[in-house]
Length: 396
Image 1: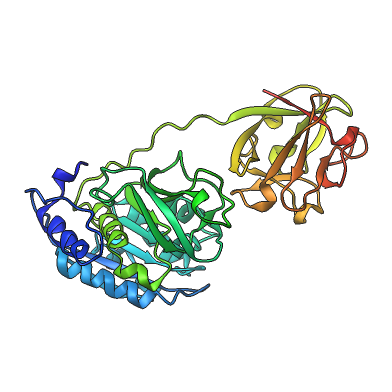
Image 2: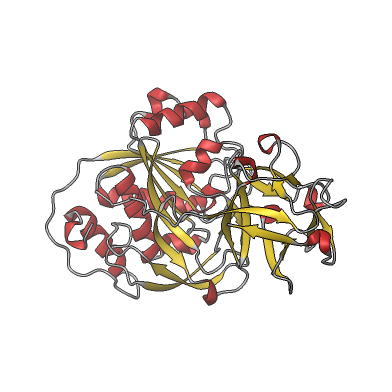
């Protein structure tokens, strides 16, 4: 959506916010049709880490509502997640809700139905540090939190200059926040709006491609997430408030937005052949059993997606069950394809050998994967040096 299609009410209020800041990002507002008043629910329950910025964030959203024609209700009571109660809201904002904030299955089911019937969701910052055992929610938010370095200044890059959350902003903004890394890069499953330049700060493990704000259409509803908003100061910062307001208006359906996802490049499909016996590694028993190099031909159980995990590392996703290979027990147990996301235990370095083979080094412990017992035992990441049992060919 181009800046000229921004509604007058929103553009006027956002311009007022920005004029109060040191730098003005917006140009002049242009006429557009107003939207009908609507209601949003701010949900900020935490069962994990609790951010000091939550009260300031609530007040900032109330102020945005007062200036932009929407009503704001707030709660930390997940008993309000019922069909009847949620139906009155155009979007629900998870404001740094952590842990398992919707603690009942009935509440989870009601929220899922709410989205399926066209509801909106805005996740702010630690909303990604939430719902780890709720796979549907993981899809809604787009990516789960992995880790973060110290709060510091970095360069925020606006990738989509037409989305209402960023229309009129500078394409490069230096700001201070707690920059989240995610367990898996969401690009390819969401529409990326902003990213952070990893070279502009220290401590990231995401690699060069590091989305921070995105949207997507999900299971019948509209979803928007921004990793920004850790600090109390964020909620008086013009650029961040503009991004947050855009997320609220678009997920509420008050303002149109293009959240289409481009077709990502397909991950390369590989099979792994052990040099020690010339046999292929299999995710035996549909991925439920430990990986072992004992197959003489390639079938679905012997095929893996080579997924970019950032920092030059890869993750291996088994075709047998669409789960990632894990160096279970910090590399102390056999490799098994049983993980739904990519964390440190699911990341491997590819080390080239002089004979053209490669070795796989587990990020979790820095040890090499071995086809133990000449390939007759399950693969385990427990070797500190490369020998014949640690050499593999990657077959495309």
